[in-house]
Image 1 (cartoon, rainbow, N blue to C red):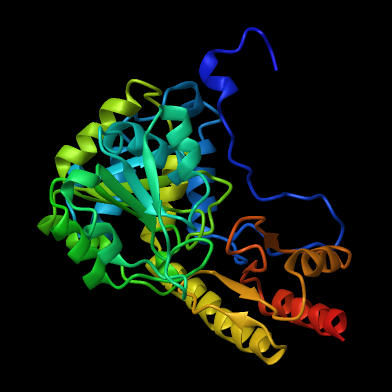
Image 2 (image 1 turned 180 degrees about the horizontal axis):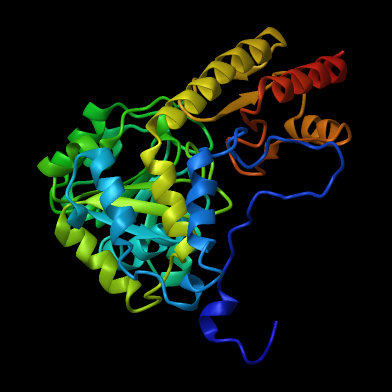
Length: 359
């Protein structure tokens, strides 16, 4: 604490990222990184950018990220004017909270969701209210619509939700966007490629809908920090205005070319995400065989609890065996573990360790 802090700093409760421990022979299943490397084209593109002997790094990158935006537009069948890029989806989300989600009426999001959302609200002074998930940890669109236009300034939620992994059907997302046509509706699709339908298909019909993606998960680029948003041009213009009032050059040259290469390699993307999906289904079945309740997941992680064992104790016991999973000390979910889907060998090591612990 310092007497030189601005008043806003005193009131902040910062986001706590997943641990990045430095342990030998670690099985790291706590931060939802993809267990497989990115497309080989990524390294090739970065090496080509460096081939000038550093001459290109002397120059600023394209502030608009046009080449990357065009590649993303081609992938999703939208116009380049409908695409915004930023330094990870967290920066895209930050600009979205400030540029689209701060209104006189409260912002709504689930009571169990990405824990960065209330942090952004605290940073930007956004009034918000949480909407409880149902008993099966699913989003109920009727709970949002029941508040009516007078009670909703905007809404945001991940799909699939985090940390539960449950997905909301596309028809329900459209019902929400149509039912609150004067409210921005933001769908955070960090995990959508592992089993849910993207709401980008609804963009042209709903001017209030913004969809946010990251290359950290299904494109295996958590270390490169690239995210993007897709929406109708007026929404994108709002994000650009915020970005250019904050940092005109959020993505460096290496990130721009590497991300474009990853987006262009559809075959690698399809192969690796299908491997993760197959491993997820086996992991869920193996956990169920050990007595865990496992929520249906459309993400690259599973959310599970054991009826007879404390989740914090299980996490600690796994850690003593150099296996790291995520435990949230939060209401309703403090007995759950969020377990990233690793390689088949990593998942097997987890199941072997849990078998010994439970015995």
